[in-house]
Amino acid sequence: MAQVVSSTSSMAPASRALSGRDIQTLLLASLGGALEFYDFVVFVFFALPLSHLFFPPNTAPWLAQLQVYGIFAAGYLARPLGGIVMAHFGDRQGRKRMFTLSVFLMALPTLAIGLLPVYAQVGVLAPVLLLVMRVVQGVAIGGEVPGAWVFVAEHAPPGRVGFACACLTSGLTAGILIGSLTAAWINHHLAPEQVLGWGWRLPFLLGGVFGFIAVWLRRWLSETPVFAELQERKALSRELPLRTVLAGHGGSVLLSMAVTWTLTAAILVLILMLPNLAQKPFGIAPDVAFLGNSVAAFCLGLGCLAYGWLTDRIGAARALLVGSLALIAVTYALFADLEAGGAHFLPLYALTGFLVGSVGVVPTVMVMAFPAPIRYSGISFAYNVAYAAFGAVTATLISYLGERVGRMAPAHYVAMTAVVSVLAALWLMLSRRNGDQQLL
Image 1 (cartoon, rainbow, N blue to C red):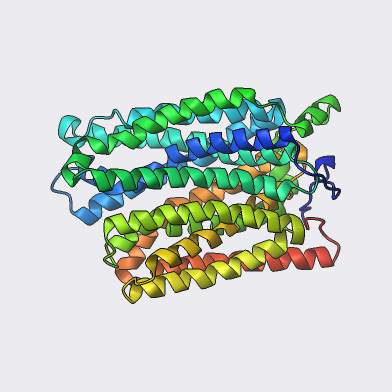
Image 2 (image 1 turned 45 degrees about the horizontal axis):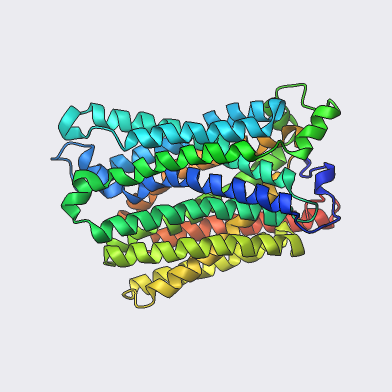
């Protein structure tokens, strides 16, 4: 069995409280991550106007929406490229450099999307340019998320890795909240004609500015103590880090991919796609759908922190098990209420957001699954390949299943992925009992 354990001293069981420097690092990293993640996800909140503006006017609405979701998916397909390349240099030359480069690469295409001409102006060139910008975004986010988790985990004091990773994840979800609030404000204050005319550009222009602010913020961060120690001991990977990952850590890769599938489904379906899913199939008003999404995104951030706290106290596997079971229950409760008319949509969506926060356990599982010299490459490969495979098909698959299977299809899909995490958690607990791992 491949080893699923980190042996660096920073992951030792002894614990201490977060220092002022630790808190500063977490805040700066989380805020920068929030701004960058906003840039990546705001695309999906404006999928409907983009489907009208970037494709021929005689395109069937369902086909135009399917096409724009395809461009959205292209960002996920590009993630492994950026993630693998940045992770290679992150394991060889330092975490901080790649941590700063990724946010710069995100700011440029986001700003460019806000300035793009539409189909009525340049014809087929419009969706092509949109696709190119989305691919560059995917390259950037592919290096950002794994690098951010590694960065904060290696800065965290012993016994606080779960909370540190969850703080960063909470920061990333704050980017979803900012995007949701922006979409809610625009849909509430602008007429549909204004949104199609110029309002859709605002979130992308703001995102570009946010991205450059994040670049400036990250200049205050320092290299991680773990990487500095590896440099001092000349213990950096002498071989290609990814080759080492694939040759000797297959179990860690499969584990990381499994839990990433659940994370992908929970975030994409229950947070990013649900405002649109609630409107068309279930008849929820747009302003109510986006209000619910804003509340859910806020609760998601709180849920990540709660599960991070829980991880440091009961272990990653037990926290993953509890979170996955709760996610199954609340997903069916939310969709059953929507099926019945949505009388309790807002409070149930808030609870759903909080319990989706169980994804805050996932980065801890992955960070502790790989040794430090190849940690960035291991997480980046497993996370980005899984996210590309599952994220690229989720939006179109849900749209297809909704037409063929029925309105409960999204709930069935999320529940199926959560069962995978339940099995992963049980395997981790059994492995520790047999002495094969020290993850918990």
